[in-house]
Length: 492
Image (cartoon, rainbow, N blue to C red; front, side):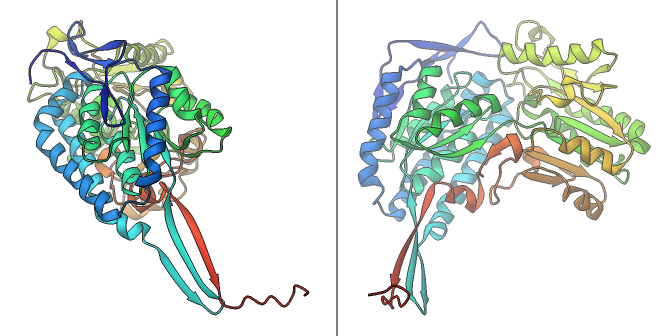
């Protein structure tokens, strides 16, 4: 990979479109370095992309599922061949460590392959013979899907939408985040080239483009991953034409550590640390607050700090020993630091964690040394708000009823985790309000693409991954063929 900036373009109806304006994307490790440029597309270009997707859908919806799978499998193979280059590009523009970027591609391909292997069975027609005749139940494509994806996992959170949408016969217009637009554009270009022009379109841009993608009457479904505040605006825009929606939103995921958790289990403690600080804490499903039973609180803190200091190594994402790179953008740095400063000003103890391998980078890049916050109040902003960065508060609890209430009073409910003796942990997990609860692990370490993923309450609508994630891109169509057409209760 060269150090020369790259330039990506919109893809509309199979053509790369030269934009009137391009925005730079800096390297979070070296903010003065420009990694590349992405277009700032206009509302009119977004309309063109929607029109292209709408027009081709009229034929594409009748395509054979075997043909769609073959096309997607070709794209998967080409993405695999490009991983060495694309993972470096993702790491450079995003800030995540190189192993983390490679891991994102692995999860993305795992899901795409699952979708290819299962779509035929998931959407095959169901025929029911019965005493009143025959009923045929089909799964029909919805139409044009608008996808809007965030910067923290741009590849996986785009392919999680692209694969099921196209495999079930829909068309799509996707808008990625301007904070990580480059590698995902290359991936989308690979996929789009395997499908007929207009099936998969790509636009970049600002709020006016997003508004068009969520309000245009020719868009039938919206697939969005991002913040809850933005989702509320999307729901209002979509209400005018009653669009289908899948929304995977924010979370303030808690880890609950029971009194029977073994604090001397080094592997479990390492999993806990990773669940807090992978991707510098910038994952929707990461554990963002930890509640520990008071009887083991002090011992837990001691062992947690030991584990964190072993695993956390901050520095250049391309350094082979680095596990935590910079935060993605300067605004996020300021927000996370403001939460830590607020907690400290109220008397909380802030403990710096890990080793800094490249100290010369810390002042110039978007770096934050990971921190542990002890002594915060249960309702301080650092506890009740989603930090989305490398800091985590740890708080004691005395009774299970208390910690379950503290967990469930949140407006969010994406994922959660319970740590302790397995059956005891499962008993507690059943009372947790969340889309997914993991036992003795958390975040991506406990993710399984074979099963549905999504949030409750203000953490989302609908599910992705698993068979349910494929079904969310189809409409159920019931065809009734009655035998007895005489209806005795209707008079002649």
